[in-house]
Length: 245
Figure 1 (tube, helix red, strand yellow):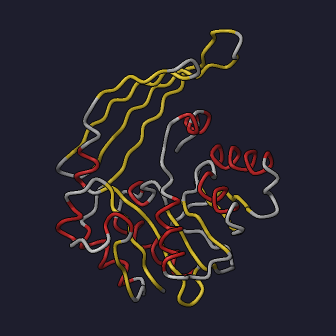
Figure 2: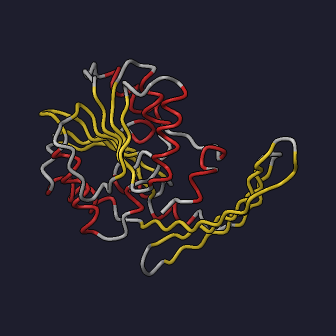
């Protein structure tokens, strides 16, 4: 997953939602010194936390994404504060615990079976200190239905074509990405990359039940979802949660 995609991932304007978890941490005066980021991609989220003086570890199943993350950390001289490893969020074991475990940008939706989600939740809790927090966001079915579109986006460095579908029966969205990345700023030569992304929507009631089964004592929506009911959140495209060990 995310092999060729890693080469142009950072050209895509994505919001890491760093501000949501940081606002929550500051508002609740939660001491966070060490963070584990599940599905860290090219490391942008952890490298933002470095600015707050927080150290961390990022794992991702894509060795290409991890290679980019390590290069970015090296570039800003952050290698002593962050570590990036190739691993699956379903079955990793780092033999250490953290104050905060995060999973950004619908990483959980990339897990296409209930068993994988349950195992990821168990692993997140296993790597938390007592009273540590697991923060994550995920797409609802409403969010994945919004993938049913076609779009052409381009600038001088990247030309990108998107086409999405959503299977109502199995609740899986599929996004087909075709991108042409410029390889030399002085010469208009582009390399073509093709990637297909699959994400599954799970009922939020199931997500909350599985977190409880994993041993989390409290789960609640945060950020823009604070105070909303599960039914209200199902109508939104993306939801944000924190769960306490």
